[in-house]
Length: 152
Image (cartoon, rainbow, N blue to C red; front, side, top):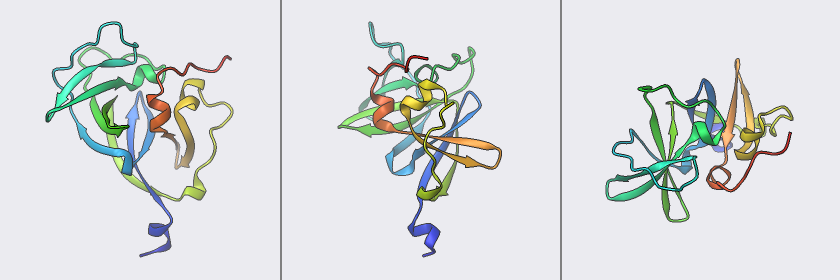
């Protein structure tokens, strides 16, 4: 194995409103198209609903709302990235899935001071790629729905 393979982390990339985000591949359980989502009365607006995926109840998190981005246009397609956390199943609703990138931890940078506050709350850092910024999502922070953006 090469040095890059032994000293790297694989990230599944995804796009949300034109921005590139990444999740460590070891956190991703599956990728699916959510169907038959049931709204949860009185839930946080970031919770799009719940659904049954192969016998598991999955809580769907609308990542556009979680990241304070505009809602999808009616009829716009979306996907879900399945995450397991504390014995619960979650689906992060995203616009599209990209590729898997193998990146060195030493190339990851802290969140820039000018990163959107909603994003900084759920990010563990960034990678500067050719012409794009990859914002690495921290699963625990994304699922802490009690966190509010920092005061400007």
